[in-house]
Image (tube, rainbow, N blue to C red; front, side, top):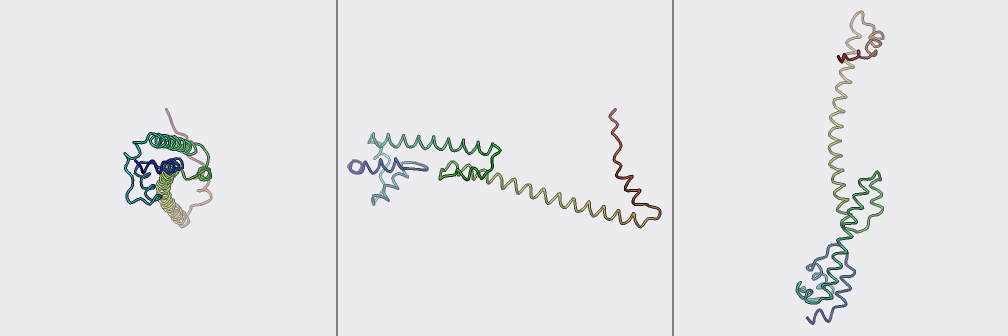
Length: 165
């Protein structure tokens, strides 16, 4: 009890200035580090003092609200036609925004991998069709009586209309 009474202003200042995830364990570790304590204070040490418990609860709620707002803002940026660069311009050290950004980057990387694979497959298929066309063209030139210009005109005239009856 004397520890809290002697360091109440320091504890409240640390809570007030906190950013990121806040737990009693994290607060205790920070106090141990800043005050040079041999062991971190227990959770019960804080909860016995109404002013500290109230400050902790208020800060926790403030961080939750900030996190929710940041997630909604990040989602609205992703859902809109705006670029990812706009999110990066507005990025501060908000854990929720960073988490949403990481999730979006992972989604984009997966999509990029899928599209790269599809592009490789289509490119290979296109090369195969171009090779087949060149082979056919070459073989048609060797045939007697085949006029490539007349054949091209006939082939390029299009397909007959579908009979939809």
